[in-house]
Length: 152
Image (tube, rainbow, N blue to C red):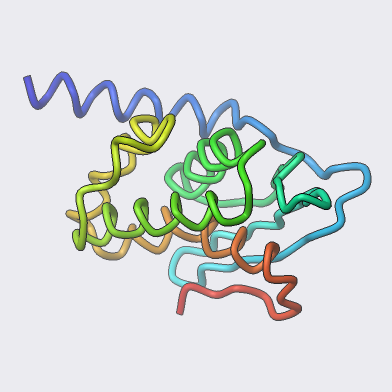
C-alpha cells in the first residue's frame, strides 16, 4: 500500500515537472522575486499580480530546477492563485511545517492534499530546500523584497 502511494506521488511530481502549471512570465506583474538554491542549482523567477484587496490575482514562474523544485512551484502557483497574501502565508506555514517534519500540514486548507505529494521530502533534508524555494520566493514577492531569495 505504501509503495502504491509513493508511486502515485512520484507520478504527480513527474507530471508537474514535465508539464508545469503557470509557467512563463506574466505580461504585467506588479510583484516579482528571484530565488536560488545553490545546493542543487535551482533558479526561479516568480511573477505576481497582487490586487488592491491583497488578493493574488495571477501568479506564474520561470526557471530551471530539479523535479521537486519545479513541481513545488507548479502546485504552489495553482493553489495560491485567487488567495489573499495572508492566506498564502498560512499555506506556507503549513507546508513548511510538513516538509521540515515540524508539523503534519493542515488538511482543513482547501487543496492542501495536493501538497501532500511533496511531504516525503521530510525524509531527505537536502531536498527540503528544493521543495520550499518557490514558497520562500513567493513570500519575497509579496513583501516586495529586492534581494534574491537563497535557500542557504
